[in-house]
Image 1 (cartoon, rainbow, N blue to C red):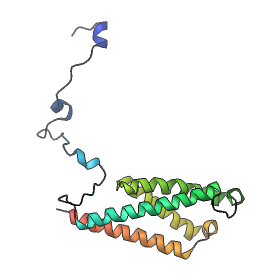
Image 2 (image 1 turned 90 degrees about the vertical axis):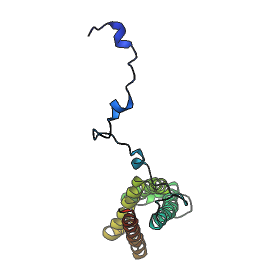
Image 3 (image 1 turned 120 degrees about the horizontal axis):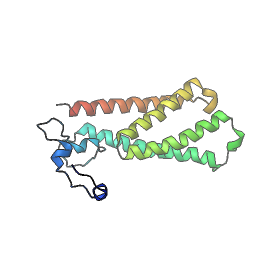
Image 4 (image 1 turned 60 degrees about the vertical axis):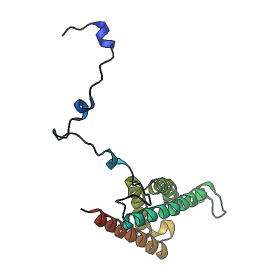
Length: 170
C-alpha cells in the first residue's frame, strides 16, 4: 500500500451498512433500534396493554406533581409567596430546598416523556424526601402526611410497573 500526503486528506469510501453493523447471521447486528427510545403511548397501537397505558398516565400525573413541587421549592429560593427569607433558614434546609427545586423539575420532564431516566430521577427524589423526613425531620419538619403520601405513591408506581411488565412478558 502506497501512502502520500494527498491520501491523508482524501475522503474515505463509504462502507456498506452490513460491514459496519454486521449481519444477523454474524450475531452482531442490532436491528432493534427502537429499544433505546422512551415509551410511546398511542391509543390504537397494537401491543400497548391496559397496564402500560395506566403506567404512562400515572407517570404524566406525577410529572405535573413534580413540576408543581419543583416550582414550589424555587419560590422558596426566590422569596416568592412571603414566609421567612431563604437566607434566614439553616444551611441544611437551604441545601435540601435547592436540591429538590432542581431534581423535581428534571424528574417532571423525564416523567412526561415516560423515559426510564425520568422514573429513576423521580424515584431518587421520592427516596430522598422520605429519608429527609424520616431521619432528618428537623430540616423540613418531618410531616407524617408527606411520608405517607410519598411512600404510597412509590408503592403504587412499583405495583403499576410490575403489572405492566407482566403484561408484556411473552
